[in-house]
Length: 450
Image 1: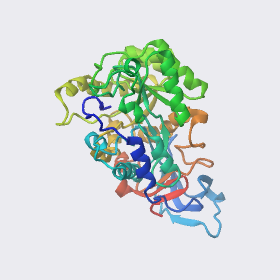
Image 2: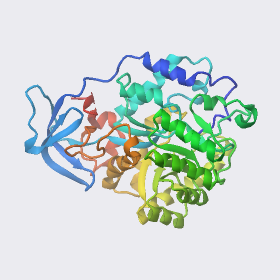
Image 3: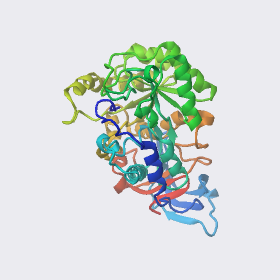
């Protein structure tokens, strides 16, 4: 995560959440027709769990749910019919580590005081809509001002994926989520929250009581899971990559508060020490983990701890020498951690973690392809649909959308892609959604094709 502290000018954060809210709700509704009844005729259903492509069949959608498959798929007279022409019907893609608001504009533009509410809202809406048009029908937002955008999507003001929101990240002082500018002093000692805290980007919370309050504030706003910073970051201003953040007692406070709400904590961490502390605290999911060692991977497998991993973008010319140095070990460890996690049976999920570089959003689909180094096409398809859906389901009753995702079966939610070709034979198809996704459906609503 790029830090606020390295680049923000004083006053540049003013009114971010208000800007997003005003900008989003000034937009016209983008969602298409409300869900009714749709028949996919002559499609081959992709069984992502078992890695099989079925024979030609019909699939009936009623409302937002798959109602019937095969001979029992009897549409009403006014049902919409989509001729599949033998193409593949598969679940929508899922990305479990995004930052929808902070990925919409570059940092300089997002926090420029001259940036208008309409610009922020329009950029956020366009980014969410483009993500849906890439076939990502569900995402887990892992930190930042997200609730206004999520409400706009859910109420049909903006076309976008389903969103599992974390809300503001929770960080210790000098942690990976300490986004203060150099002249902003501690709220605890000087009584004034930083602008990043005021705008819903972060909670700087020290001690068990503050961590409890920050966690409960996010839950109050509607967070489906909690994101805390448990170790150093590759691009944050104050914390070296090797440091461990939050004491066991502080981390356990977040876990306890989340568990009381029947949901879980995900922790940003790279190193074995930070990750072992998180596991001891009862954390359910580790974000990143590229500096893991094999014994800690085995411990994660034994404890049933999820690993939400990413295929990172290589270094770019715009990165500072300091950031490149901090990234080196992380980039080097990426291949090893995927191999070990697969070898030892760790519960795996996949995400992209793109933010403040909106041009990289267009790489979202292509970031699936490096997985070919470690997984078969069938394993990749299962990972980016069914397995990611299992992680979303970890939110339990705090999930904002009740129903089954990540599969094409009777009773599942109708988040579907009609694909030109067979991803089990050619996984590269999913990296070119504009060409290869003929139909994109979310919640029974057709957003492309048909």
